[in-house]
Length: 169
Image (tube, rainbow, N blue to C red; front, top):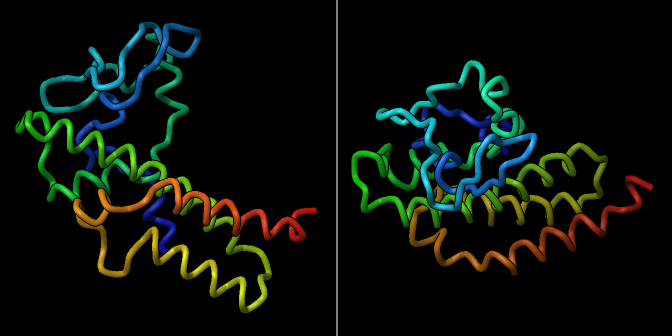
């Protein structure tokens, strides 16, 4: 698995985290924002007006968040670089895809860490099978991602990781 796949690239995303994620007014966020509501700091081109000083404006939580590359993967791979900002009808499907892709990328990140262990051959094969399921060689399509049984995939990843407890004990 290419580790670059798990790095956020905001320049190639449609500001999905700025819409998809809800947050409550706190020491991390200056305002309340509902899931599906665009952050008021987004400019007309999908950039953040306060990006350089997010913490100074009370949005330290934005600095901590990492989509692990899910945002640009949805925007570029599934929607061909299109954005809900130019095509408002894409908002709901992009948000649904982002929700699933975030989980997929979280699992891939955990598997990437597990790959650092000196795994036995059967464990390496199991890891490779999980990675192939979550990062298909042919790439994701919107219908394939929608068909992914998210809870089942997550359970398989969790069971595999639990089987590796001897490596971290």
